Image (tube, rainbow, N blue to C red; front, top):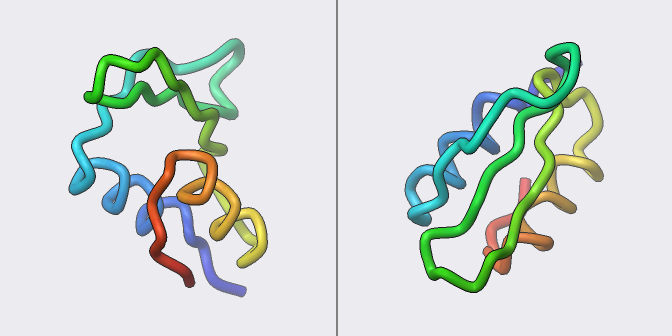
Length: 66
């Protein structure tokens, strides 16, 4: 199985998003958009599902698909 986590984080970085913090006990990261709209996205450290990998950019307003 693939791990999409690194690719999703790279995609968010390229779109101008920044990691705000590592959430809770370390299984998720919180990312904030650079557009100033206050949008935040929770990104799991490891993403095994392609559907989850596609849902995160969709929440962030990015049209890229895996």
